Structures are given as C-alpha cells and as structure tokens.
Image (cartoon, rainbow, N blue to C red; front, side):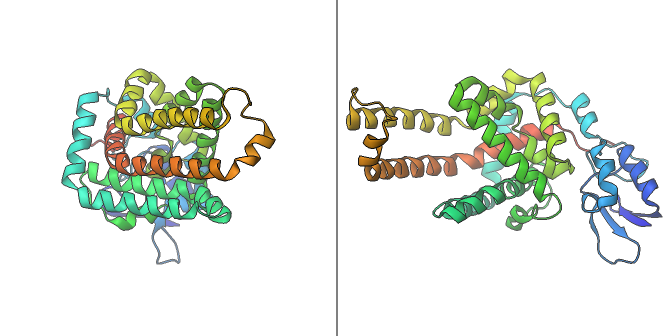
Length: 317
C-alpha cells in the first residue's frame, strides 16, 4: 500500500500499487510525485520505486497532480504545447537573468568549476562525463523553478543524484557522442541532433522520463517547430557559436604556420615532433571556449527553460 502527495499538497491513500499505476496512466502522478510506502516514514519520488517504474515508461504524467485533477502528460504536452514566440522567450530569459543574476551566476559557475576541474586528469575527465548529465539537469531544474516562480536554491544543482541519475547520464553521453560524430562527419547532421534533443535532459529531470522516451519526446515536439527552435538556440548560444568559428579559424592559421601546405595533418611523425606546441595551443583554445560558455550559459539556459515551459505545459486545472 502507498500514500501520495498530490499537486495540491494534500495526502492521498493508502492505495494499492495497481491503483497508483492507474493514477500514473490517468496522468494524475508522475516520476517526481512524492510517495510513501507502507511501513516507511520516508517520502520518495515515485520513479524510485521499481515496481511502479513500468507505469512511467508506458506514459507517465507531466505533473504531480492530485487525483481527479487534469494533468498534462508528456503526450499531452506534445499535443497542447504552446506555439513558441522567439521575442517572448528571449525577453523573458533576459528578465529572469536580471532578476536572479546572483543565484543563476553562482549556480552556473559552480557546475562549470566542477566539470572544468575534473577535466585536468584522465580519471577526473571520465567522472566528469558520468556526472555532467545530472549536474546540468539539476542546473536546468533550478532555472525552471525560477521560470515557474517556485522557490529555488543553489543546492538544486545536486537534486538529480538519485533514482533518475542513470537516464540523465545516458542522455548526456549518447546525445553528445552522436551529435559530435555528426558534426565531424558533416556539420548539418550534428547541429540537427543538438537541436532536436535540446530538451531531453530537462524532460527526464522534470517529468521523470526514462532515457529514450525523453529523447523521443524532445525530438517529436522540436520537429514540429524545428526552424523556430533552431533560430532561438542560435540566438541564445550566439557567443558560443562565434567562439567556435573563431577557434576553427585560429586552428587553421596555427596548423598552416606549423606545417605549411606540404605536410598532411595526419602525418604521425610531424604531429609527434610538435606535440608539445600543439598541446599548449589546444589547451589555450579549449580554455577560451570554456570561458565563453560560462559567460553565455546563464542567458542561454534562462531562454531555453522559458521555451521549455511553453512547449511542455504543466498541470492544468
């Protein structure tokens, strides 16, 4: 038997696991809904209960609503999500950043410092890849709570180190690997994958979705307004894009100066002879890009989460 805290903060139950699964199927609860198992005094997110997780995978709700309340599910969010207005998202993102600048700058800098510091060693870099999804998802939740005018604290960036950690890790690794591979092979496929999966992390964190359902829902919703969302992301991340273009130019100039046009870049002996110089140049370029990302990320996330709140509505009365 279980008890549940509804969206109106009232307690419901006790009910059986089957009844609770029905509530999930009816979009009255989701992965973040607080549930207490019989014999326990601890309230935990519904997604942490293995016996209830199958109901979430079958189509969990998008809000932690009370029984009887109409709740927007992931599928419902897809059907009823609002039409994106570029000016409104950019304006609201800028306003959010101005109103909560200290909190957003501090939280973003903390996540950036953790991941940047971890990259200095091989083992740290591996750990950074594993935890990056949960850290960025927690950071997105902090922004989203401010967008929704809910209480938020810097500790929210660590809120995803729980039952939902694995889907977030997989989303981060798979999306970055495939989009990076697409960018190397041909620029357009890589950019396309980055755009269509741009809401995957926050969908998994906010709605308790598993790895692939979150990526698929993001793809389906973004595909319906692909050009508009791609334009929004292009504007929001413009400094990062310009920094990447500048890095490409600097790299071309560097290698032409180093090798001229007579030695192919893949000539192993030539690369080994200049490995120290190449490593210093690559490190300098990477640090420049990371600093630009740090400065750009607060506005980009404020805009992105404003767009998310429009495309994936919350519980409706």
